[in-house]
Amino acid sequence: MSRELPGHIRALLDAAGGPADSAGIPWAGRDLAGSVPATAEHAGDDGTADAGVVAALAALRSGRVGESAVVDALRDARVFVPLIASVAGHPHASSSTDAPSGVDSGPDATSIDEPAGVPVSDKEADLSLVTIAAPDGRTALPVFTSVDTLRAWHPDARPIPTWAPRAALSAAAEDAQLMVLDPGGTVSFVVRRPALWALAQQRLWTPSYADEAVAAAARGATVSEPAVLQVDCAAGRGVASADRDGTPIAGGGPGPELRIGLTLRTGLDRHELDATVRRIQERLAADPVFADGVDSIEMRIVAAPS
Image 1 (tube, one colour):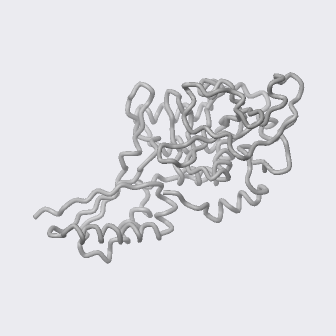
Image 2: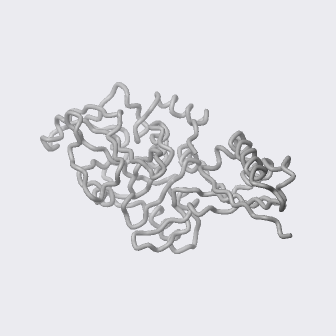
Image 3: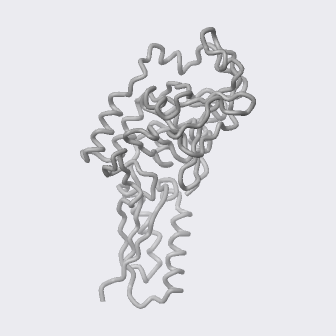
């Protein structure tokens, strides 16, 4: 579900001078010539993946941790965002079969005057922050653990090092609801909207299916429904993902990440059933705890045993 930015994240963006790039630097009124804070901060970076993120992904892949461990590892991790050169409105690099569909150069391109040593073809180019289209149509920001994984995805993209929370804040500024770690890689991990906002604030994130506050909100939405006998919250089918070889991974999927099971009394006709579910959905959408903590849901209707 698409949600407006909460006030505390909007305040972070305003404090940074408005919409910002993945280095946390406002786009307006500046260029990328020379060294900017992000690249200066990461001077001498060897371009390899952050060891903590690699370990968290390996532990997730083996089933030893949940997806919150990956998001937690990202709070202190350096990642790379891709910038794509474009000339006269056309991409500098043609799309490859490895590049996902929906790559958009975006409106926030900043003209640059490159320092010596940059290829001539880039001197007349703009650099654009890349976003991709998720299967549900929402905007996602791709980020990469290493220079190698970024260039395998798009060989002509320029890797810009930045801290993952800054990338998350940039995604929020771009109205992206998702952040995808290593798209096209051996393991691609989706950071869904609630986790993205938590990462932008550098706070711990609890998945909705493990959050007691979310479960309480789900139960609260049914208290005035006599037809509802029981409410259960669990991980949805969209939590799971798979690596490149098809091995299932218990986390990092795009959603729906929360399954709400409703046990209903027997004897309801179709009209009563639809009306009950609609009222519950409306209450959940109006509950700020639920709306901010849940990216997407699936409902499972169970008839009470006779």
